[in-house]
Image (cartoon, rainbow, N blue to C red):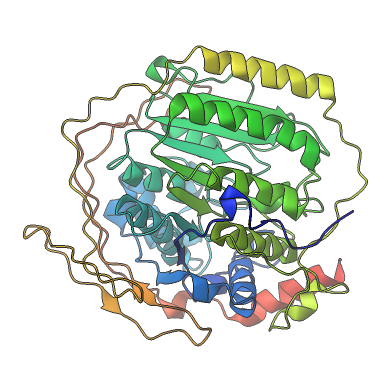
Length: 498
């Protein structure tokens, strides 16, 4: 099987370069869920190392995300839940057993040092990416630390505490009448679907394993409710799906969605647990097959926010997100991996691509055809581009003058915004163009959430008259961050299991 790294021929329309903003906080890899836990934020640092040594960082504008504050997280999440996340620590958790149970914090979603700072960091990157897209400061924004799609209004779920995706979509809705959310994680994107289940301004499309598999939602028959009827698309899949079978569904469905829904922006959750050989997954996608979803969404030339998500064989997660960053940039990435600080984890081949397995594909052509036909039928019941009353569009989130190498911006401040000017940072040693600390965003009016579904409603009914989101700086508390030694111990264990 051809596993070369070249997937973007220069003659292809999607080979055109795009302006990409990349969000990364050097501290994110230090957060540690605990020994033996499959979720390892260290994979973000491994991805970043690959991007640096492949020379991709110098083709992007690199931003340190501006941490989200509790009142900003409360634009979707319940006040008492956010307060709990802010105050709980490993030392005090035994005194709050009732709250731990109430907010579903425990085994899958453990309390660890720096938990709240971790939530602030990954949420800030996703919202910051949405702000950049809203201001036409990039074509594609990337936050591999984000994409935690299971978190609900009042509880943690599936290793996710704060739903950065919902917060980013709410930001995009301030500028765009319609936003499309696409999820290629192996698990159903239940938290995002629930948040927008009753609105026609957000369409959610999730491709996932279904049947006796977490979170147990995402049936083909779950289509949305009220104004949101037919704006939720669920693509239930079985074990072993390969590249060819996956794209028999992905491309025709997404093509029809783009034609009918005509989104102003797209959010693509790129969970890498749908890759072959994932520690918790059961699909058989190659890195190229997974990245083809990114390439296809990129080809529509619509503002695109790329987020991470699941992915538990972390050497393959880093491979995948590095390659997909190259796809976003329109740069061909070599299969031969450059030497770097995590080089030994990629042996014995030391290549970017790995061949899928010979596992059985339980997704028959008949099953795939039936799923595609049913979903295309549902889409046919929608009106093209639903009209939205948008006369009272919320104010923009002014970012101020960017220190850009290629062009001088002449943007003016809203005198009432009260925001600070961007601060130019030192250039990273890895040839990064800029590292810019994101300025405060604006304040967003509380959004009502209603939902008729199989559980308590978490739906965010998106209103057209909203105030701007205001995220203020709050640095990571380095004292609450685990040493990297514990992470390396877990990585060594995983390497032994290869």
